[in-house]
Image 1 (cartoon, rainbow, N blue to C red):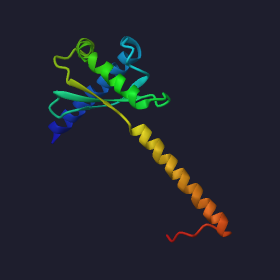
Image 2: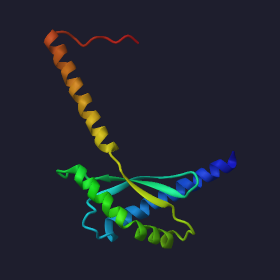
Image 3: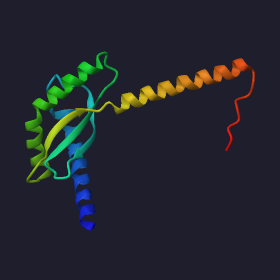
Image 4: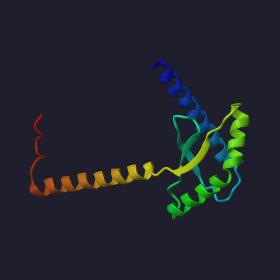
Length: 140
């Protein structure tokens, strides 16, 4: 039981170190023009520690978000070897997990959900106003 908590804590520390270091590399060191404005939102390490999934969130203000995601992921995949080498040097570890870059779309999904909830609330307010009454009382 205690060993599992130790292992999980170690994986969390390694994942956080990878997230901050890869994020710093994306911001300043990688000069591939395909890599747009993005950040590392999360790093998940497999239980064995052999591979890690790096979630990349791309700026949603670009006109073609799908194209920007594809280009950014292609640029990061091309720089994967350099990133792993730098992680090994910076972190001083013997093994750096195999990295897989994945587009993180959770922020866009959350914005869409918020928009739909806002529309539903607006429709409900208009329906109540049209009926000329107070909002219905919810039983507790």
